[in-house]
Image (cartoon, rainbow, N blue to C red; front, top):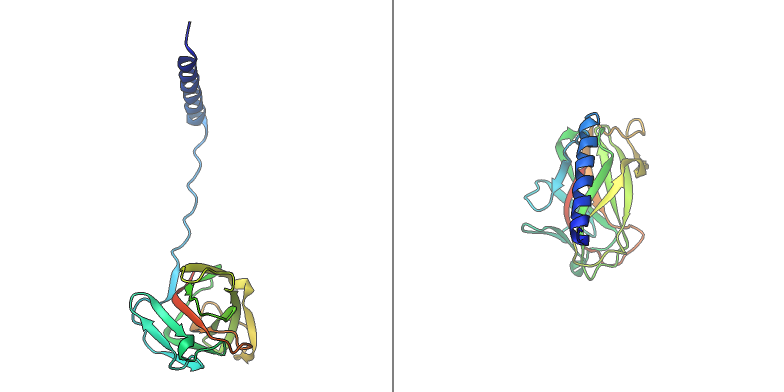
Length: 193
């Protein structure tokens, strides 16, 4: 007579053999296509040339070596400011579905939303907002926006009013211009996936 443990082990072995036999008869399934590597638009943990601030962020953001760009509300940066970079050559983001930003909200931040903005080669700008009020201060996170969430700007419509994602020439990170509260955030990277 077999003890219960031996019977259990024998049952498991029989099931494993049966599964292997069924798997051997099953047709091969092709491997899933790998997603293209993300396009890094800007990595703030490295030296980034020709970034300029405007509004209350002008002269109120600092490079935190190997950490990112720190917007400093304690020095006067509020929601009504931003910084940007005009790229040396255009980026083709047309085959990407998402724009992602890595950031860490700082404890003194009082700006509930930040804006990500892009400009194409003919000057058309588009923007989308990121709500960050729910984030835990000091914890770096990646936040994701679908490209379909970006709205073409009526203020900067370029020559045709349509964003050409295959010819991105400029990016902006901005606060919420409707608030004059302190902006305190660390921007780490911006990429497309």
